[in-house]
Length: 315
Ligand SMILES: [Zn+2]
Image (cartoon, rainbow, N blue to C red; front, side, top):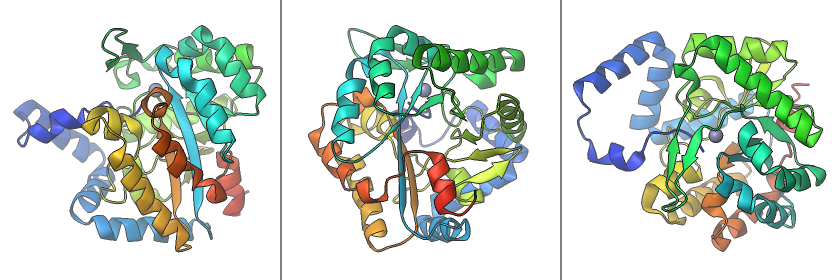
């Protein structure tokens, strides 16, 4: 699950309330580079895509590349993760999994099977950061690192690390912050990367597509390689995911499939674009057509971030 901005709500609010506007101005002032990337993505989407590809090339990528990850934030994700994984493995894909520690604990048997099949897990913190309404299926975001004292979110990361080691017998070396766009001020990210380094981590995929437009498909800070999740080619500032596009979109996979087709067209033309996409298992499990288009990305697929760095000659 990604940015917890409800796109449906955002669409109907043409004029944000004064407090929201102030918050945005404050955020832009704290990080003008992010505001600049937002303006580029918003007003010049075609130029943004061209810049994205140019930055991929500059980063050393010579061919299209694809990394698929799943955020597992609720027990509904745990219930389908085994079948989703098996279907994707059968078409040549090797997804990564970012599972909140409490969710991992509750669904240990399912995740162990996935791990035994060779899947790599990203530390996604320990505490649940989404509440599932069992009756309606609605998911509400909870627990934001940006609203949590440093000592506490660092403890959450430590506990998430221990959960993966204890339950799966894996030593994670990558991390994803709960909730995209909620913990990305320069000071927050610097503190995060520095802390991950002290734990011996090498990778983070915690930033949204605007960071790709600023710094490229990955960038090195404080000893960590950060991999922003990718944006839609039609709207480069919007994450290409199931949370925003299906769950908080029109409830169908139509647009997600169209956005994936757009990436495929660019990749089949040989452009070295990198698609770093995350999905929520429960949001796609029922859509055969999503599995079928994902299968088309198998020729470009990498099983982890280390492979992307190796392809770009960064290791
Ligand atoms: Zn999550």
